[in-house]
Structures are given as C-alpha cells and as structure tokens.
Length: 352
Image (cartoon, rainbow, N blue to C red; front, side, top):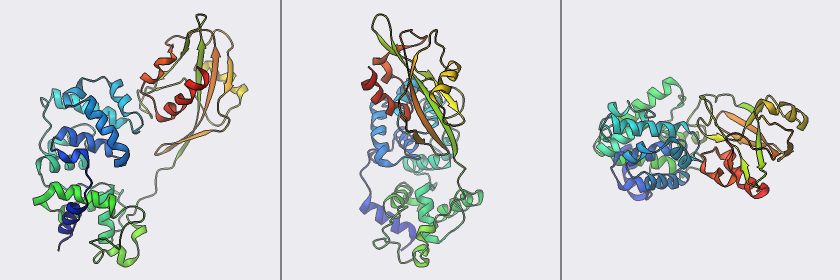
C-alpha cells in the first residue's frame, strides 16, 4: 500500500467534524485557511463561526469597515492576516465580480495568499492537483522519509514541495490534502506522536532511526527583541461626574497596525515613577499635574513571535478632559491587542 493510500484510509477513519469540511465554497475555505495559519483548530473555530455569522459572503466582508474586521479578529494575533483578508475580499468583489479564482495560479495573485493557501483552495474547492505543504505536512514528510534538510531554508522549501508533489494522490487530492494535514495534527503530532498505532510505522525512517524528536529540522530562529512598554491610562472624571478615558490608534508598519491602545511611552529599560512623570508629556499633554499611580509593580511579559513586551500600566488620574476621550462604557467597542484587552477587563472594575 502506498504512502498516499495509507493517508487516505487513515483520514476516512479519523477525520474530525469541522465546519469548513462540509463545503466547497471557496470563500469559506479561504477564510478557514487564513484563520488557521499559526492558530490551533480549537482556538480558530469560534472565530471562523463568528466571521461567517457576521459576514456570510465575501460581499459582506468586503463592505465591512476595517475596524469591524479587526474587532472580530481580536485575540487571534498576527493582525496583518485580518487586514489582508479584508483587502482580498474587496479584490474578489471588485476585480473578480465576487467569484474566487478557480486556479492555483490566479489564487496566488490575491493578497495574503501564498503557495499553501492557494494549493488548499484550488485542491479542496476545485480538485486541482496541488499538494499543500504546511507545518503538519513538513513534519510528516520529514519523519517518514528521514529528511534533515531545514524546512525553513530555500533548499528545504523547494525540496519538500517537490516531494509532496511526488507522493500526493492527484485523483483524490481534496481528501488527500486534508488527510495529510489532519494526520500531522493528530497522529504525527509535534510532541508525543502516536507511533505505536501509526499505519506508517513499518516504513517510517525516523521511527526506525530513533530520530522522531529531531525532525523536522529548522534553522535557528530570529533573535527575540526585548521591548519595554509603559501605557499611560487616562482616568478622567469630569466636573459633570462623567467617567472617560482615551485610546490611540497605532499607525505605521509595526506590530498591531491600526489597532487601538492607551497612550504609549516605550523606554529602553524599566523606568521609575519619577522618570515616568518627567517623560509623560512626550505622549500625554495635560494642563495640570495629574496623579500618577503604577498599576502593576510586576512587569507583564507579553510574548509575540519575535518580540517580548515587558509592560507596565500607569494610571493617570485627572479631572481635566482630553481631546478625543470617550466614555469608559465605549472602551470595548474598539479593536485592541490581547495585552490591552486583558487589562481592560480589570481596569473597568478597578477604576470605574
């Protein structure tokens, strides 16, 4: 029995019931594939269902505001995926008259759609024989064939794509592609793979050579950047007794583009209360000296893929209103990073 036949039989017996597996609608397949990049199925499924409920068609997504899209995406991370998602929806509506391209080559022209996503949509929706190569597939192929070429090298990317093409089942590409990804997620898992019950264990090179935990090979990761974030949280109680605060939108091409956050002072290291008071006018102009209170003595460490943010929140209490402030009751209407969302949960209860 061939490699692909084993995968197909295993998939027919073990596949999970997932909402996007009941359709060939390219909009829904595209949405699920973008969401599940760098996201586990368990975490991504509620977001997928929420997006489908709010934007049943690509037209609905194209007509939404970016703020609506980012708010629904809040918590998934890698927010460039959400912005690309929105841009591509508009392209499909305006350039392709609401119909997703049917071929791998045309799909690659869409923003945020690379080899993997184009292969997934083309094969699952249109039966075009293009193999998917994601993290799960890299792991299965590297272990089964005993390949130690780094999967994130130019050589590795080319080699594994060619190998995936060679071993795929072109006649059953829809199920085969979903099957090998599912196999990597459930059977040939990163940690504690189920080798004893594996249908491929008799011919798996890594199992034979005792190199399961060594494969796949990756080149050294990018060095993690350490940053110190100091958020100045306005706690405004106006003369009328109204309680207000302030968020600002992040601009530029860095992390969290177009999301909202409290006024931010970034520093090269930890800073004291005295230094914070001196530097506060750099980001928050007030006509009077406010009361400044450190909210968290212990730094909150928020880890991103290549950055670790060491964060403190400083409460800035004042009775003078600020430009662009808004009632605290509206704070949850804004799309914010998880770091800010977690703080807001306690902020509202503690100060208002």
